[in-house]
Image (tube, rainbow, N blue to C red; front, side, top):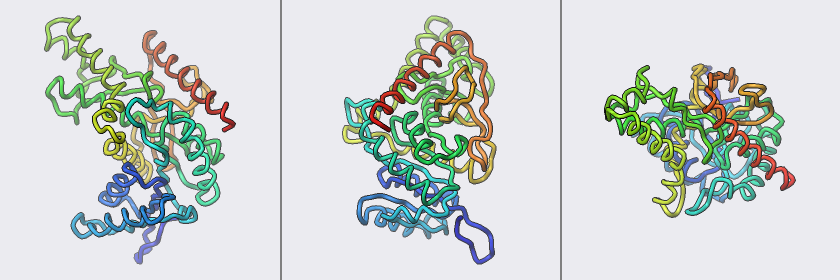
Length: 329
């Protein structure tokens, strides 16, 4: 398990697999929030050592005292409480998350086998795309209980949805709740009916602002479309990579909820067991996160239209999983 301080207080250990853009931001955020000791693994020689040295050299400035180290040896995952997996190639312009399947599946399978060997008690958060398929593969490769293997997608998608709503209403995004369920892709399900600003329905506020129900729906439809394409929008603007600040922050929020046993209710990719009429598939839903990982799934009451969208999204996930299985994984 994590390192012991001189006082005898146990320090959590967070392992990051993948030292790219997302991994680097995650390492810095974990250190700055004093979540525990951080080890970053990457296959690139010296790169994780260089990134973590750069981060730790700011410890006096950023006022943190945890260890931050880099490694090229999977053995250094030993004792990790939480492992965040970002390994894989990022999207490029014109590439969908699904296009990454063949490349990233092989990487995630190898990562999962090493996690199983060196950190059999860890809780694993997967960020690699295509997310729903990669979480499915991670659980298969590790053999861990479903509660200890989950994916980061909904926290990010919901944050994007909330951000766009806040801009439109000119309110603090801190007061906007805007859940997004389903697969992490074009079929994701932003739940308009549940979106609210401190309990006041967003659509009610849009209708009041525009004094026209049709206009209000038009504006919300545009926000929903932008939410679904948000990752692609960043890819097109960057031209040489994909989003990394917001996915990193989202993964750290999940890790913090687990490490500090916060019992946060967050949208995450978790394995369903009959909820929403789905069994055996990883899909984005609301769940309680605590020291045991996914401690409980919260099933939201969907109307006919929302359920149809959710079913469509689940079918897209099933197709991805079938494609992955077709690769022999």
